Image (cartoon, rainbow, N blue to C red; front, top):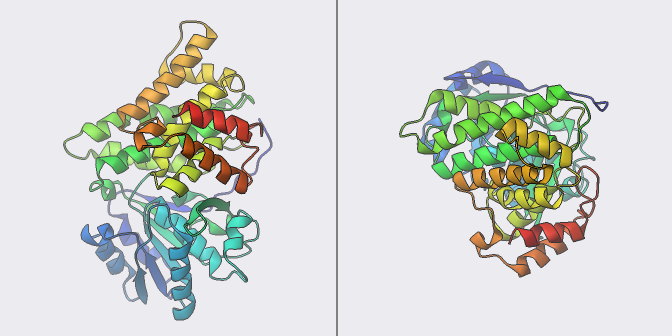
Length: 386
């Protein structure tokens, strides 16, 4: 196991009716800006509950944060915060709203061009406004980590950043808030959490059985509950609760502590989202099976372990078992309703060339746990995903 530091200060308030806890979690003197995406939080009554819990605190609402949140929209919120003196942010939504809130929290006190935060991947953040989260869409794990991804449409760029200054102070996780989600968003959430786990697990052995077993348990849970989430005629509280908590645990730092991490699939996926506006999880479903097949030699031992422990694949030669594990992964994504080929989105060779140009422009030329996912490797992955 590698040396590591683990730090996660986020307070989790999990369960039914926890929005009322905002009365204690938000400072009594705070001037609060609530950040939301579309109209769903208002329609479902979640915003009304939030406002009631805030009580006499001064608050206002900023709406319109998009899926794959944009730099352009986030900067409008930054201007609003600066102009009206808000000193606490509250994200009500899923990963996109939370990611935008992290960027806004860092950008408000930032001196200079806020785009530099993304260009330097957050390394120049020295402070941020405090903020909390009311989660309504489980997927990204952003509610309990220090990373985010922002898109700048004017440049066709989607870049990640991270900083210890942008951990949420708290996150309220009420599984009943997922009851109104459409099947597509539930499926995206399952696959997003699945690939987050895989990118920290499917690398190479470093004798870290705690992290391995933890990751395998998360994957098995998603495989078990995923199809039920899509087929259930009525929401099941326990399945929703397990999805919410699994998605949080997949990217809160625990399973990645002391082990090598990959993230090549995510970086390629970000470029597909930035250029073609494909849902983030759906780009991951396209890229991951091709990436695993391309890098089966580098990931040989962990692919065998993954096949045996997660999918129960025990017979055949090593290469047959690895192929079966990759195909089981592809089949799971397809059963969840996420295509695993670029052609499903009408994309061909032109898209491959464009994504490669974007990877090069953003310095994504040495990806993966070994830094050996070059542009040539990324090209083979994308062409295999056609």
